[in-house]
Length: 328
Ligand SMILES: Nc1ncnc2c1ncn2[C@@H]1O[C@H](COP(=O)(O)OP(=O)(O)OP(=O)(O)O)[C@@H](O)[C@H]1O
Ligand SMILES: CC(=O)C(=O)O
Image (cartoon, rainbow, N blue to C red):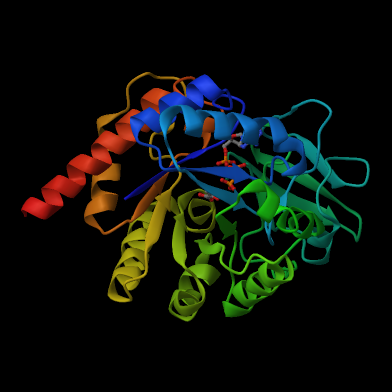
């Protein structure tokens, strides 16, 4: 069983990383939607120091930007209140220009994994006026989803190619590709890895929307590991359909003997609480009973207040589930 934590400001210190390894973490993920390998020299040195202190031999995964759409850099977080108007694009919030080719009046726009919801009222090729249906505070680089819109972003962004060129020198062992839409995306990633002289790097295909779920059988031969990425899946599906989607993807992976990961909000309450909820612990246990071969924490370790405690709960629950599975 593999246990991953996401590197971030809350855990990038060698002392805290050592506690995470002592808790049983087997690898870390660096989310390159929030940074670049270039800017992470200090964090990678901390990782090496913690690994040598604890005798760990961690996997290092990078999570690319891929075709995912995100808000750009904001000078300060922006508060959007329900009923207010918000402008996207020119003269407003920075968003990828590509979205204006698909935006039509009436289109819903989910921001920050659906925490905020807008509806387009008027659109042109550079901007859109929107109504805020669900308000909140928007921060830089949060996700954007346009349910049902026909958008075709390229597999790899320029920054992905720059990061891939550096994976050998940084000790990266695996690459996660978000929003995989078909085998072509994975072929494009494998080609980029070959060009970087890193053919042996493990490829993790992230299922983040209906399109990815539907293509799973086609993806299996092209991926080393499947990732059931519940954050974005939960944007694309009504939340009550997410459990069945997770179970079906797990079943397909098990039948093909393809290792798979379950991720996002495994221990969400531990961002601020030193103890998890009963529901979270049961969710982890069930994911292992369904055959998950890896589990990963995201914000809990990247920006949470209790990164080491969260990793201890994850590993202890995962190991307990493995024992139970073996005995039944
Ligand atoms: N390298 C980083 N630097 C600063 N903050 C980070 C970093 N990685 C993650 N975070 C913070 O932790 C939060 C949760 O991490 P996570 O990796 O789940 O990001 P995300 O934006 O939800 O992207 P994804 O959909 O890929 O999971 C992020 O929204 C961000 O606020
Ligand atoms: C981890 C991630 O990308 C998700 O759950 O959407």
